[in-house]
Length: 437
Image (cartoon, rainbow, N blue to C red; front, side, top):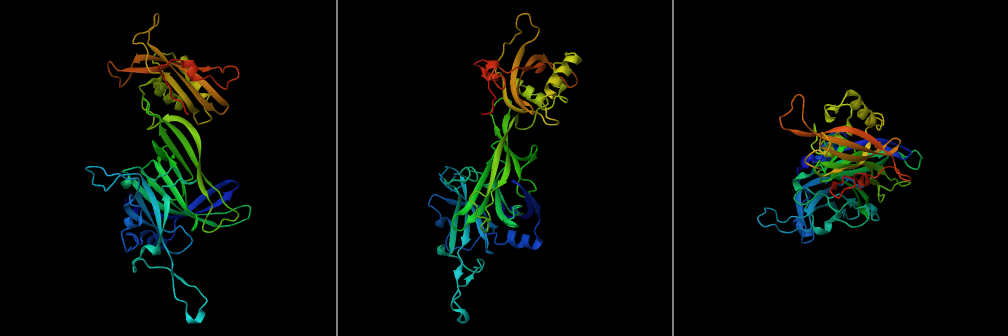
């Protein structure tokens, strides 16, 4: 982890109703140089930082210079391992989950001057010129924590020290109701690899810092197909998170997280709302964790790839189907789309195994996949029938085997139900369920 990864950005925005859009602009070059690059080695402490921590906590990685409270003096963001255990043969002192602390400097009191003996003057300590003792610093625990609003509990997993980066962001928002204007929100976004985003802000000196997190074990995306953290120039308004289903098709559940600001009337400086920043989740259904293969091998993957692109995936239809049959399958699926948006896939259920020979009277080995999707007009289940056949056409390989879609039909909903239950339709103890919880 390098301190040079820390970039400082300013944003200006305007609130419209409950929707608050943040528009970001870069701060001046001077601010960038002074705020982002000063004190890269952290404060000068009279004793090692580990001596100020619980005995089983250890500082790891670099210091980050930040300033998200309501004074001119910088704070210092540092990361620690906690609940650590020694690993035999490891070069690390210990390994454990990684939390975060903020070290702030306690202002020193100057002697009152003869001209104004009643005045109490605070002086900012120059940490580059003065060695700070334990009573001159204040440590705020960001994570771990078990109080409400402290996220999932840690910044990064064991051994992920080198994947951590951080960026300070400043945004200004307005309240159209007129209770307050031009409220400045300072925050720090911390990233652990491409799977976890932690956002922190100061509640108040008494309440410490607020925390919110988004976690996607299969990866976070800033858009449906883009990395989450590249070229970050503003607070992330929307992020997608993938959770692997750990199935044979490499499928993920995708969720969308939208940023929400909860503003007081008026907010106390610097921005002390208990849960000022949060991300609300909404389901996006089942998708491929790493994008659709050219021709998925397993039946559920074949159906999902076709649902995502029926016009461009004719190769997934059985090669000897006549044009009318192919057109009918494409039309059945295309009707479920909302304009240019494919339906959300909530359930995808197929058989794990099927007989190694065609059924009596049949020419092909067949299997079935049931899927339930959300469309603009409601919930709908479909049954796809697939045939096993040898790959044909340009690029085909002798003796290669593939499954192809031979038919797709809408399933009527049972009386009193929104849609047919795919578990009932497939109805086999050996079937492989791919259903969103």
